[in-house]
Length: 474
Image (cartoon, rainbow, N blue to C red):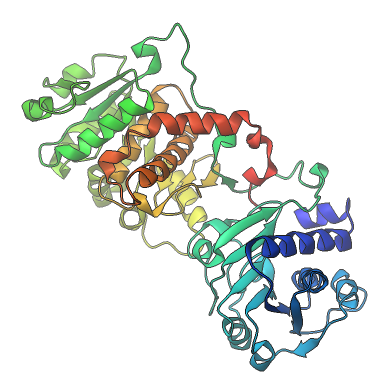
């Protein structure tokens, strides 16, 4: 849709020229001159490739074009091809022999079928691959590898990333992702409501602390404490404190003495849950980290009956997997993909669609955790988080995330926005912790950078990046 809107404002041939320039500049910036084979399809993606070939050759690179088919006469791609004066070789593996780099300009993001074996053979013949728009064989909608999709060192796309750039395995197959401005005027996308958003500080606004604030205004986070894995509860509670909660309390019951030996800033309650729920200031609760099924069964129904805002994770999800109706009434759930499948069954097709369907079924915000975390609300709002690091793949990381999200909920943020912001801050904290710990932080290291992570989010928002159209996906 956006392509049609754009072409009504700027000629496709001009957009193609701009796209080719963006790709050629990205290549020249990152690589020394070498022998390049630009593999071109017959459509607009191939047209971009002809522009890249022409520019690299003008800059002194050794370039050949390997043409899958001749562009249709009169098309913008045909016009771009007419300006290429170098060699055009047949579509064959032998045509790329001796090349140091192959530029994949075959299909782009619109492919909806498995990539053909002959196409894969040509592209995989050269180890260094650069993709225009999307590596051939990767779905722009789902990130699914359709057939023998080849990984690339660099992918250059235009205006806005597609979901497939951010969803695994597409994210990994893209390599470094560059989203280039090709002169698309604002009117080309104004009025187009994106189905999915990119999660970053332009999507939400963090609560701001004022001079008149006090602890209850900043929000109270309560955490249900378990007897078997108290470390998980502590991680959630510590993260809540570092994220800015005014007060964090652990409902520890009979395990209170063990918890009192931990962080001195945490308030440990040993009374029955029924008495704790008499305090109406304790609106937001975390239920699940470190809890056994029996402990969840004792706590969660009481919280929901008391109309509390509940973030459910870990043990609560395991208990809910036996009967999904047990989770009806929670505000948000944060399953990893294994927990998600136990709750809702196998994921077929688009994971954002699956997350949204689950959010609507449960009537709760869904945080499908992973290297490409998806956040979906029952009202249709959906975001993909690309701001993360593999360093977060450590035990206890998810417990920390619950503390971050709960704090933002307690401060009054909309639940979906709190989940989006929490996931982003969690990713930023992981990035900073990885730098501080040689790339191998543990969950206990993630809470310390949270203040700096909030500052970084504010910096990005105030820099005006929130107005950048890259914050939406097609």
